[in-house]
Length: 321
Image (cartoon, rainbow, N blue to C red):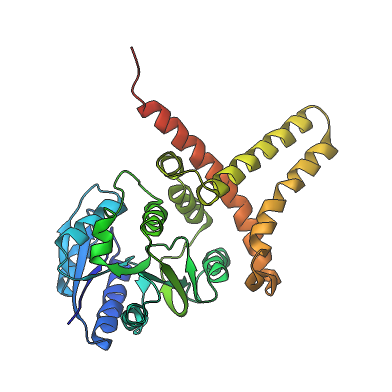
């Protein structure tokens, strides 16, 4: 019988962990799988380790490691033929692993990810941002990358590509996906049943902070990846967005308020296009408006993160002489 190793990295997730591990256990038992729960812990101080042990998980002490390294440590001790990576704030449906079994049995893909959606109590910006995923993946299709919030693949494939890149603080899922694709793997996204994401942002400062963190390894990813439209598209948009802002400010300082207003308005066009490129959003005008605002903010945050990353890479570059 196939054994599934469910790997859930944790840092102070006591508020979500019981729900996450309970749902993962039910999914494994529903499919009749042999399974193990592995929790790499990043130095939690809220009782997450004790709770994970109480719920039957194997806990690994992984202080001061990036998320990719924590997942690698979990995979290194796993005994399963299948690896199922799960974020600590996700509630998977009972069919999660059964669907993965069907995908492999029918040779539809080598990697599976389900769309995650917010619970009803999430604030509007968190709901809209997560519905962005639903808009991009509202039908069953192969993707060029999948997030590791919930991800199933065979152990031998994971080991063949070398696992997660531990040099990346973030963007490790995009990097893993690109290497999986280059190795010939098909990445399948299924829109239903959805995974509930309980880690939604409860405030604007949390949303902005998370976006800054998510974008913080873009410079490293660009440096190590092959130049492609997929990897360059958003960083170039973010850089262009800041260039428009700078030109608008210059026009304002030079006493050209109409030119400044025009440039400022032009900066909203990419955000609107990103929001309207999916029919899912075009059929939901209110959602499209919310996403336009969020994409506009995200491009500003991404520009800051890209600049910080480039400065950091330059500071780390060894000097000559």
